[in-house]
Length: 292
Image (cartoon, rainbow, N blue to C red):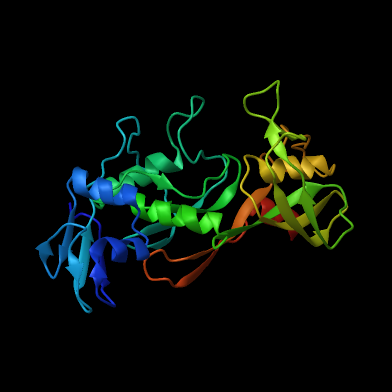
C-alpha cells in the first residue's frame, strides 16, 4: 500500500516547522508523522522540523499508514460514488442505511461498505466520516481518507466554509417563504436518543426556505448554521411542522416509510487544492413521488 503524502514548495526562507504550520499541518499531525512511521522530506532528503528552508525547496510530508479499526468489518454492497481522489470520498447514501454500525444494525452500514472499497483499492485509511447522516436520511456524505484531511475538514466546518443544504417534507402548510429557527437543543432527560429544545441546550440555528406548499405537507429547503444532533428534526417539531415520516418527533408514516429528509447539496473547499467544490444529489424516488 502506498502511504498518503502531500507536496509543497517553500515560498520563502525560514524554519520548516513554521512553513508546515502555515500549510495547516498541526502539532498533533506532526507527532503522528514523527512517531507513527511517517517522514518529512526536503528535496528528497529526510529532515526534522528544525530544518532551514530556502525559497523553492520541495517539501513532502509522508503520512503513516492507517489501519481500519478491528471492530469494523469490510462488507460488499452498493456504493454510489459522487467524487473521489487521494484525499476525499463523496458518496450518496440511500435511506434506511446506517452511516456507521449500531447495536440494532451491526452490519450493512455505509462504513462497512466503504471499508470494503478501501480494502479492494488498497487505500491505507481508517474511516473518517466528516458529515454523518441519520439512518433514515438520504443524500451526500463526505469522507476523508486521512486523519490530517479530516482535521482540515473539521476546521472548515468550524469556520463555516463547508455547508449542506437539505430538502424535506414537513407536516402542515408553512406560510412563510423564508425564516430562521434559532432555538437551543439538548438531550431529553427521559431518553438517550431524543433531543428537544431546552433553555440549557446548545445554540442551534436552521435556515428554512419554502419551495412549495401541498395540501398535506410543505416541501422545504434547509441550511444548517450549526450541527447539533437531530437538529432539523427537533427544530421542525418545535414549530409544529415535524418531518413527514418522523414518528420519533411527532410525524406520521401514512405518506412515506421514513423521515422525509435528503441532503441535496454539499459545498466545501478542497483541503489540498483550495478549489471550491459543489456536489448535488437528486431526491430519492420515495420523496420525489410525493412532490411531482
